[in-house]
Length: 220
Image 1: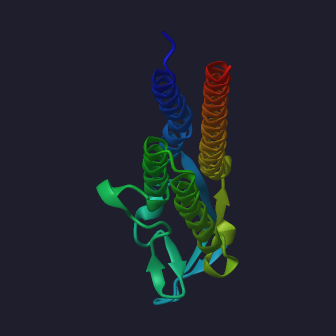
Image 2 (image 1 turned 180 degrees about the vertical axis):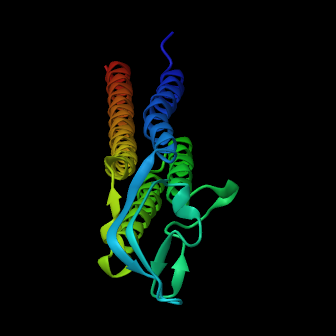
């Protein structure tokens, strides 16, 4: 026998599984990108005068490759407050820009379990903090006033930002799916309710007609 409740359970499990497969991809790739090179530091000058001894050094060159993990170290960039880290450190010494994505995914699963589109929208809001963190890092590291001309950004930063946008897009898609599903369910319940009412009316009309015919037969 066909059972609609079983169908709902299967659809819910299928939605959770498909969402896990979707959200796991940008999360995994974003995690891999943390260990990739985000900036190429390159310094080259024909003459350098030391600020303390005023000693002159000719043909000074320096270079380094910096990952997102390196951006967590204090002193990697200058700022109005002096030497600072470019990214905030979160739990397990992970960059907060990645922690926000993990929390966003957890909130999205809660939205699916509770079947609430508003919670899925909250997932978008949380993931957006990751995007803001990347923008803040770039504005600090790449500022000319603090030596940004020596820091050359790589495409890995853009790829991480794309993973953030993809996470937000998935969250929006899930929120829309839950909204549509709940609306369809309400319409279905309303249709069933009206069908039952019509059936009751028909049954009542048939009973009245039957009673009326019996009454006429008794009179005759």
